[in-house]
Image 1 (cartoon, rainbow, N blue to C red):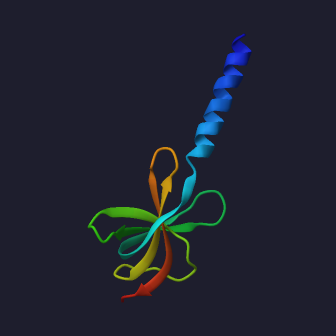
Image 2: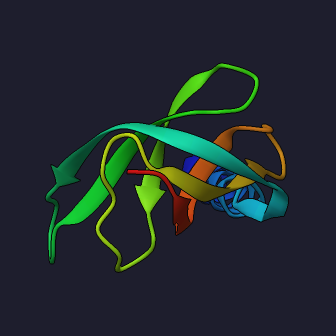
Amino acid sequence: MLTIALIGVGLMVVVLVSLDQPGGPVREVHAVVLGVTAESREGPSSQVATISLPEGSKVSAHVATSELVRPGQTVRVTEYSGAMTGHKSYEVTAIEGGT
């Protein structure tokens, strides 16, 4: 009986985690890069930019462009939202201009 309950709980966790994957782009905005850091996990390193959104909030965004991203540049950012929790994530997709 305990085994069945554990399997049920495990399946519920898998379903909830898979449902909270980004549900697609919510919006695309222009933002200013405040800083860039290299993030190294397993595999190749990636860049994470601290950006200032138009409404003034500062967030971290995964850099998804092969272009060199530097502080002061204006970039195009796609905002994603989790389907269940509404957790937002950000991705720099292009450099728009700046210094």
